[in-house]
Length: 436
Image (cartoon, rainbow, N blue to C red):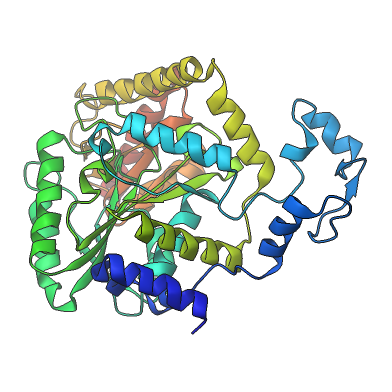
């Protein structure tokens, strides 16, 4: 094992041996090289006043070399903020302003210690880092049955971890904290689990209320007190899009420093929060009572980044940073929030109108981009294909009964036509069954 990895492991073990035991074998082995090209280049940048022949970029006229046909499209930005490599952990200014944002939007973090957010290539990359650092073959990853399908690729296919599901909703159609408790108890002999919490939920658009959130935290504390080592990941991809009565902040705040056996991790990003999907700017943030432990986790995270993508794209980090610094940012973001909330309200009004009675029920939703129909009479896949082929309408079939509809990408005035056509599709399929 590399001495740098050994040093980081020892730092983590001294500060919290429980967190050390959560690391995967790769998580134990990984480190960020301090004597390689990046470190030598950083030293040269500070001291090489005459010639700096270290980093692999081309320069011209005391700045990064670039093509005019590209710079003409980006003339609002300085070449230095576009063309050189971004640091592996991301632009320092962007990391700082995102940390301020997290504290501002998460009041329950007051007085707690979190790491400086590390820039990822959007949220999938952040989740992949979690998997690399903490998931070994046959480790247990706990998630609800309504979930984002990429979790399986990230944790099961890539890392060999086993997925343990529980129903998202209980009989009262609230978050099923008892189901979470049961699945943790069923795998308590493993001694370790990774818990994925995704609110607003994809695919259902559900965020728990205050009492439900407290119940989730209580279940996690209970499992930790019973000796389980828990990496609890708040996948906050759709953070901030809370339209009705629900918690208005990430559970990361309540989970931070909850128990020595709990490592809280927040994965979020500008991707969906700031409507810049193609920019691929996300963040991963850790919580602990120890600055030394957080520093070690940061080094290991940078090691994963260095060994996979090396660093994230510089231009999009600059674009996001400038937007967050703009006086117009808050007002413009509120405008988009209002549009999204209005679409969600229209959808709920349509579904509660009674005009589609008998065709489906719907899972509770109060946030995010999506909602999910629970079809009563037809197969979700049959309906999806029929809608696509006969009406040119795209939806997502999930299992036998569930149909995900993204109201985020449908203008408000078109939503009645969308759901009327989905209903017509159900009628088409049920009438064809009768005729047969």
